[in-house]
Image (cartoon, rainbow, N blue to C red; front, top):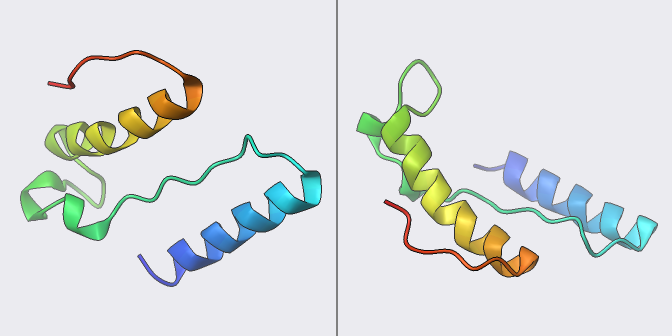
Length: 72
């Protein structure tokens, strides 16, 4: 969420430029991805972690050139 997302995004972009390293990425987790039932004590429960993995794995797989099947 803001303002953290914009700050971290800017830092990642500056780092990539300064170090000329295109292998540094930021994958944001959209706030709407998790609902109230996905949270425990300020951390995602198993259901929330599965949703985040479903968001992250396809992006990471694409960058890494991995072949993967559906996440259950």
